[in-house]
Length: 316
Image 1 (tube, rainbow, N blue to C red):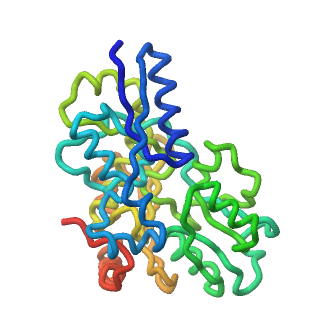
Image 2 (image 1 turned 180 degrees about the horizontal axis):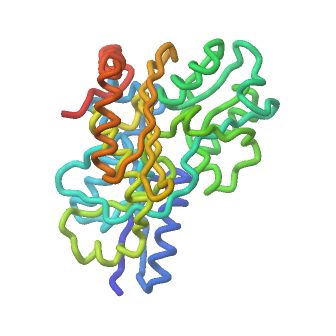
């Protein structure tokens, strides 16, 4: 079997993901190497993620561009990403060879002293890295003081342990993969805090048309995860969003139908638009939900977000 080179970010979670895929490939007889690649999102740590686009340029693919450059140059054969970090539309020259079986995509409330968000005192200090979480949290608890939270999982948990925050919100998938769930107190249902599109899923990216590598990776592709995340990313694409906009999407199969929960929200929580619908065609379902949210005022919310420089500009 041919040797394969994986491109990955250097964070603890990213390396867990890369090593997870590497182990599965080695079990199939491949020799595998992992190359650590530092991305723009890793280098810019002095501003909230939602403002990296304003500071660093386009803002698209802030955790993936340098890895894709290495992939295009042939330095690596495949890249392993958290799917939620990928823009809704991949740049030309790349494709997703596999979307792996999905971990729990929901968001987790982590705290040392409080069992759930309702127990937090007024003006409690809550850390989160995303406008999506901030908006939905503020809709539940407008009194909370929201503060940016950057760094890898260990750094974020350490800040919580050191009482810099009363609570922080993280993706449960990453905590579970790293076996760091001790401070998880509450898991939010999608109708309370809708996850990011693709959250909990790993994406394996390759050069477009690389049929040999695609064939070697085909066993990693999970049909249900592919169907659900295709739907979520279709909604994201229709709304013109990257990974740091106040848009949530969660699709799952219910009674042989695909069910999609989606949300567009003002970052201050003053307006939260939700949509819930079923369908058979993943792309059509996501597109239709996006149309519905735009028609109900989502276009104005997103236009205001972009005009305030809070996130990246919409895709064309």
